[in-house]
Length: 232
Image (cartoon, rainbow, N blue to C red; front, side, top):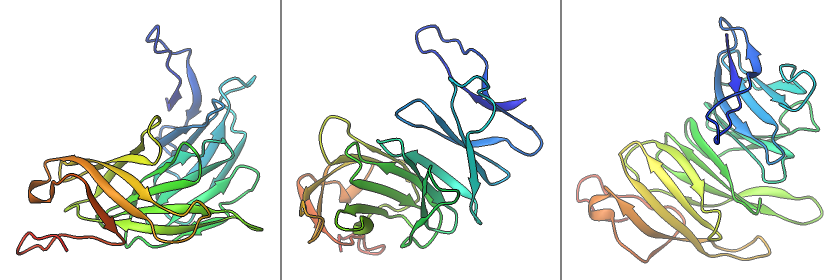
């Protein structure tokens, strides 16, 4: 029987399945925890389900939804109210748990989104794709809050597989790429009101060859020349 298990790191034991699934139709592919301890999981039938391991019947979903494309990555917001969904069609969908369906669609990537990550403050979000770029999304407050792409970070030669924000240093994040590189970045210039240009600085990187340099500041899109190996 497949499903999701919640492990106790102190005892290296698990109390049992939190969400049991049919092994023939609902193998679990993506899992994310909310700050309140609820679990969002995606199975290969394309369905997203929200579970509460503290409920009387933890194997019964509290809510479920689906989108018309394959889901490649998940991350729950810091307030536990929504989940970001990286999809195979290149979009990032946002599902508010109060809604039956994802109500926001963020477009920009050319192909599959392999990783998504909310910032600890909840006002920024990263999405990494097979198009070799990271998009930095910013939440703009106002009469109606909305997400928009603040800038695009490129330079990787292969798919962006993983993303993570530094929980201690504000606006600092890490990218993991299929080209075996790991890079540390920081958003160094932005408008607190949610407008204006955004600058991103690469602080450190490994296995990045001639591209590896400290204290460089980038604005908008960047790339590497495939022939001369020069920064564009």
